[in-house]
Length: 86
Image 1: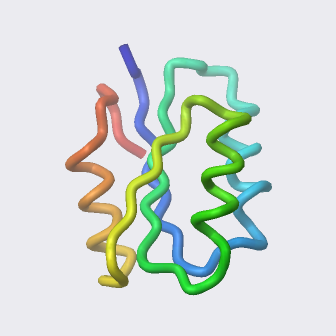
Image 2 (image 1 turned 120 degrees about the vertical axis):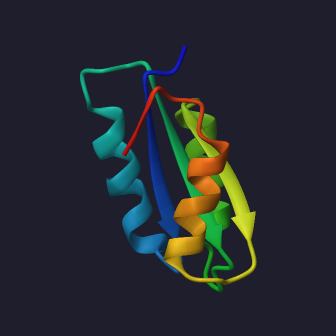
């Protein structure tokens, strides 16, 4: 069972994705999922997320047309499996 779901809205954040995901991967709690919600990025964010998913199996990727970070967070929370959401 997933203890914590981390929701990360992504919009044109390609240059920050690797560092952000690695930060989550370094946490001592391992019962986590990282839900990355691509909010219609126009850069290569989605491609990078798919590459990171191969390395880090705790990543879940959701996509939506650009609607803003609030709606991306809500979408991620609706799909979260964790007991706690961050």
